[in-house]
Amino acid sequence: MRQLLLSALLLLPLTVAAQSGKTRVLTAEIAYAKPMQFDYDKDGKMNNIQMWAKIVIDKTDKGYEGYFRRFMKDVDTGKAVLGYADINMLPDQPYGEKLPVSQVEKRGRTVLFKAGSKHYILMDGGADYRSDTAIANDGNRDYIVELYDGDIKVTQ
Image 1 (cartoon, helix red, strand yellow):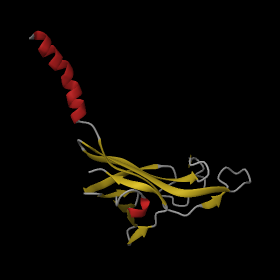
Image 2 (image 1 turned 90 degrees about the vertical axis):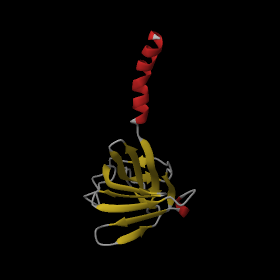
Image 3 (image 1 turned 180 degrees about the vertical axis):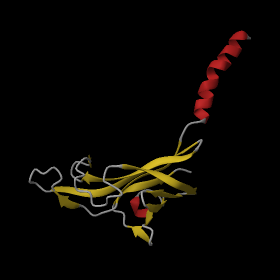
Image 4 (image 1 turned 135 degrees about the vertical axis):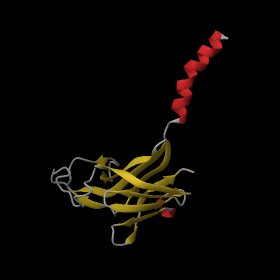
């Protein structure tokens, strides 16, 4: 009996930890611009690059947490290009910086959230970007973000 009680007490923290964990709600890695050329490494050779966004949102015991990160990806190597941000085209969302998300709302396969100064709606329509939808609102209007690659995944 004593061993059974001791075993139960030892397993209790594991049970509580499992119940207080995070559940992934949204994972998105999407290209929002056509490929272009830019000498990001300043070696005199134009690199093939594309603008991407990565969004991760988890549900926790206290609500939602996650981030929105825009970055440049080298098309030829498939690797993210970070740290070149002396060229910062949008000062409220520097490339590579993880912006925390807030005002998260999940509706089926759609997630609404705010990151930086913009509100977003991401809809998981199926297998890849061709069936997904991304909408951004800059405070003035909604606009559909054209997607060129990647996928939006919303868990049920």
